Each structure stands twice: as structure tokens, then as C-alpha cells.
Amino acid sequence: MKLINTELKNNVLGSMMRILDERREDILTANKKDLDAFNKDNQALYDRLVVNDKKIDGMIQAIAEVKSQDDPVSNEISNTTLDNGLNIVNKTAPFGTIMIIYESRPDVTIEAAVLAFKANNKILLKGGKEAHESNVVLVECWHQALQENKLPKDWIKMLVMNRTETQEFLKNPTEPLDLIVPRGGERLIAFVKEHAKCAVLVSGRGNNFLYVDKDADWKKTLEVIINAKTDKISGCNALDKVLVDKNIEDYESKLKDLDKTLSSLGVEIIVDKNVNAILSERDLISKDEVWFEEFLAMKIAIGEADGIEDAISKINTYSGGHSSAILTEDKAVATHFMENIDTAAVYHNASTRFTDGGQMGVGAELAISTDKLHHRGPLGLKQLVANKYYVFGDGQVRV
Image 1 (cartoon, rainbow, N blue to C red):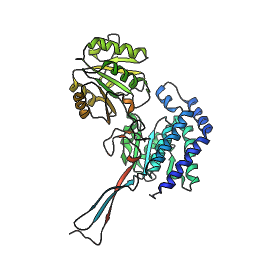
Image 2: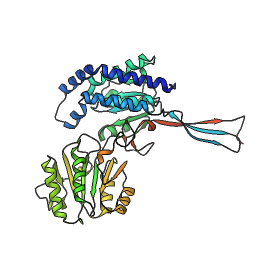
Image 3: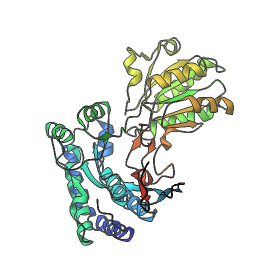
């Protein structure tokens, strides 16, 4: 794949910022068509679909932030000269072509493409049909920016395919394909893993847990739970499950306080059998599968934990590997929890809502990876490169 110099890449991004601003009305009109056609029964997906002036400002800001970042390509990782005289240099290199499959969010069409392009990758955008009209206009903007700078449009492509056509493309891609990022729920991830013939980087599923330790500050705990649950229910970093240590002082009264607080905010509460003995009016969690669910709704499950090891075991069994949190004033306990929890991000006395590229200092993100290869957590600009070895010799042969 041809390497584009940094100045030219940044010129494209500068053009794109101007074009988005100029074509606001086109973008908003297209998005209105998507919103009018959408079934509003799924509030989380609807929220993700909405584009307004603030959202367009956010798209422009995301591009500006990436434009200001250093080019991640051809940076030296290591440089070693061996006894035989070979000079071995390891440098960052583009992946090649990245395909992202995502639902509902038109802003992903901007963030995914700006990151891939600045890292010198081509990107194939397979958005959901619910955002089709919005995505068409946004990709038109990208193509205009590329053409203004005398670059071919195929750096950024929009794929319009049904499920069967997508399956066939994954099995037999019609062009080189180096990495696929399915950004969505379990069904999408399973579908891509089953059919893809190249590397797949899993992203998007939340099902985040928060453990209330026996030494938690209760006021702080309530504030964190409220934010993590209600700030944005459509976020993959929203809270789904709370485990309360049964050894906490005034356990019963604290459970009732948590129940009252969340229900007053419109949160549906379901509980395990131990908590149900105290919160008897709440629906009982009927099957084990519920603990694996990501709700994406004003809904939360509250369960009992018999100490930190019980909490760690439950979280590592059921969570989506995205984010988890502990509320405690005991730093040693927090450290033990954080070192033993198997999620991409783990928090001490803070909301899971911070698992976001912008909030974590990474900048715009392609997704939140819950995989362990090649990266875990927010996929920002620096994470969208691979590496390549350059070996310089003077006639050396291996003996």
C-alpha cells in the first residue's frame, strides 16, 4: 500500500473539516430521513442514530484532534546492530485495509475513517441500514475531501450489503482485507468470527460490573452508580450489574437506599435471590443467562457478594471484558481487585463511563477492544498500525 506523506493526509483532514461544516444541512436532512424511518422501540439504538449540530461539531473536533496528532506510521520502535553486522530496525507500518461493521452511529463513519486514513490504512465502512442516508452523505464528504487533494476515493469506501452478501464478502473478499472490527453485540461478533478469513478484533460489548466493597464510602458509591447507569444508557461503558458485599455496615438499609435511589430515577431493578430476601418487591433474576446480558436500557441487576474473591469470580465469569469498578476506601483491596479482574479497563472509585478514547487521553477511537491481541481498550490512532522489520546488511549469509 502506498504511503501518503503527513502533510497530504492532514490536508485531506483540513478539507474534511470545512466540508462537514459546509454540508451541515445535507447531513441533518439525511439523518432526519433515517430517524423518521426508525422503529423507536429500541431507545438505545435511536439515541445513537441522532445527528444534530452538536454532533456535527463533535465530528469536526474529532478530525481536528487526529489532525494534530503525530503521524503513527514509520516510527522507529527499535534499532539493533548484531555481532554479524546486520542492522535490524523495527518500525510501525499500516495494517492495510480495515473493515468495520457497526450499527446506528453515523459519527463512527467519521471517527473510524479519520483514524484509519491518518494511519495510512484504507477502510471499508459497513454501517447499519438504519443509518444509511446519513452515512451516504458523510462518505460523500470524505470523497470530496480526497478528490480535492488528488487522492482516489477508494481510501474510504461505504459497503452496502445485506446479511447474505456480507457473509459472502467475509468468506471471499473481493479486495485485500487485513483486519475486521465488528462493533456491536454478541450476534454480530459471532457472525463475523464464524465467516471471516482474516484477523478479527472484537469490540463493543459492555455488560459492566461494579463491586461495592465492605469499606466503601456510601455517598461516593451512590454518585458513581447513578452516573455509570443513567448518564448514557446506549454507551457500551454503561453499568449493568452491581454486586454489594454482604459484610458492609448496615447492609440491608444500604440495599434499600440503593433501590430507592435508582427507582426514583426510573431504573428497572432486578435482583438475585439473596438480595430478593431484602428487596422482596423486585423481580428475581430468573436464569443464569441474565448475568451475561448487556442491557442498553434503564435497567440494572443487583446481586450479593460474599467478600472480594466472590465478587472477582462472578465478574470474571459473567462480564463482557469491557469495564469494571470497585468502590472501596481500602487501597490494598482495590489493588488486589484491579490486578485480578479480567477486563480492558478497571476502576477504583470512579464511573465506568470514562472508558472512552477521548476521556482516557487517547483521542478519537475506532472502538473499545475487548480482545487481548493486538491491543486492549480504546483503539486510537497509535493502535491502528502494525510493525515491520527492516534488515540492512552487506552480503551476510546465514551459516
